[in-house]
Image 1 (cartoon, rainbow, N blue to C red):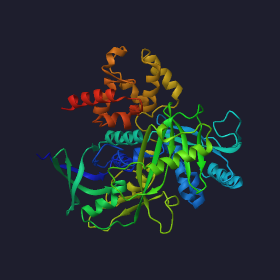
Image 2: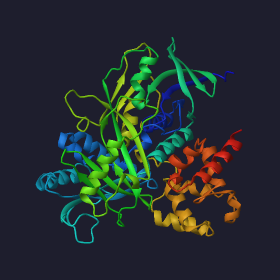
Image 3: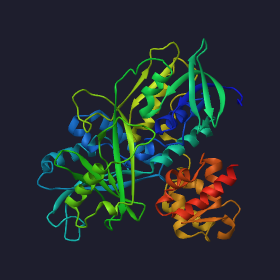
Length: 493
């Protein structure tokens, strides 16, 4: 069965951070936008990050000053427009004999502090590590600087919500299965659950991440304009290693670095590796060698050792980097390029990029379409709060929310506000007590939240809700997951 034909100005293929950001920017400028994503929002590379909103301190070693400055500027912008999703994080750099020269690090941190205006993030400093440090007793000196820690998957969802608020149609579980140029632009076929619909549009944005070149090849449009290099980054999650809220940047003798970050109160997030990847993009996982690499790094620095059996969760994602001949995976630039492909109708492909620069990437991408859509409005996202981010002070928001719903559990209030911001006021609905929140699936997940995520945030299955929307997967047991799955199955019939 075919669905009615759609007509729009812009079709965005890919529901990761770049695709969602472009859809939001374009819709806010008055374009009629359709975004299609073959899976869930953020289900590919975007949710599998190290969760950092950062300038990229180590990129200074590669003399990528422009990228670092742009990233630091965007770090401030994103922290201001999404205060519920992004918070400042202190990161300490312990020094071992094989570490980079202390003078070089101090110079790099000085440059990092002053490449862009700082309003929300503190300046770096040298630190002395005492016996109460979680690090090995031999480590006594180091440095501390600040970056942002954020919820990557929810950042994608909030951009999709922003796009929908401005009239965009967001189609998840919908794959672009055909794309052909026409006299007026493009005709695309979008397929979901065996049903297809035709989309007529003036221009197309290929924001498919690591799939961008395969999409071009699939539709026989042309070869990729830029050579891509796929690099896998893997992470492990272990029980909380230490009590403090600071993260650590660990330096390996091979020149690579990994981050050790407090995560979701009960865990520590460790990553990332950087491995050349040529496998199946829909089934990316960590290898045993990567697990051992990360564990060995941690055990070199920390008093409390970890073993493979102590790894509770793992995840991996593939970054589509622009290839640079002769450079290692570690040194390949994380910057992006935007290319209007040499085809008969407007097709813009997004190459590379990182979460921190998604907003400016989206702005530049839509700017490239101004000759095609001369009547569109100017750029607008720099000072526009993302959904849920329209507040100035989290403590004041918490007091207001508590006064409105004093009967809610303290931990539930905090989680809802951190994940939804001001949108959290919509979750209880007309409920006057906990019993009226509906079925309790466990770990503070109630039916009202599940229904909200399905109706407003495109969630379809337990993984969408537990992994990308709420992060409650890390506490749910098999029985609780099955109960949620059964509820969703009956709900979606």
